[in-house]
Length: 242
Image 1 (tube, rainbow, N blue to C red):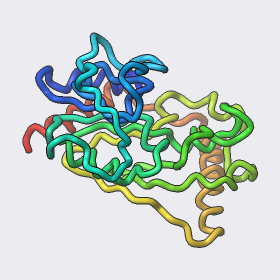
Image 2: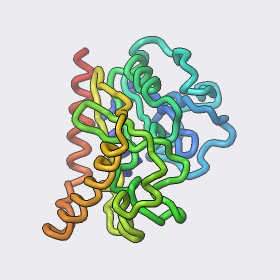
Image 3: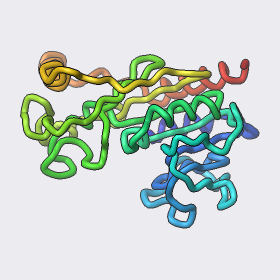
Image 4: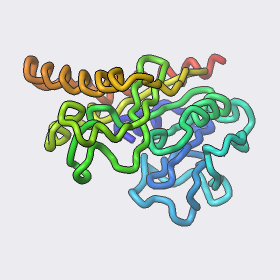
């Protein structure tokens, strides 16, 4: 999770609000009152922790289960005021189901996934494109998420990925996509029936982005902390009115 996003949530979510962290095993969010993950509480924090302060969750509020099992999670409708799901949806086999449960159990939330700028970059983890264990390319547009199967053709064709070293020039904000949502959002798997359509989807993004950077230099970078704080505040305020 972006540190600015964690700080925004800490600042905006009320002290007495209930917060759930979904898929947070490797780097759990300390502010969470409960965590839902396949992995056990005893092995949490492989990559550290998100946020400041002590853990609000405990072994008793750490729910160990497969979040993609197609069985409703053990929480009531809208039981939580806020839910976080950061750097998880791209990893799992059924992100559509997980999105539906996020909306069922919480009034508002924050989703973070790797951007296509990162996921279509070659060579930063090994001689392939993006993260080897990720199943999906993810696009977020307003209150909608598209999941696109991460096809292996992109590893072999230079037109379908950014060159080695490209990722090193990305800001932290450019490396992720974020969705601050209230009430509901939509999610789907985007399918390509024709190989030519997939080829165009992969290659045009790379070509357009490289052209834009050559023409205009780096992206204009947002004021991360201020912008994220405003979006977090809007999401929480809308949820509180429901």
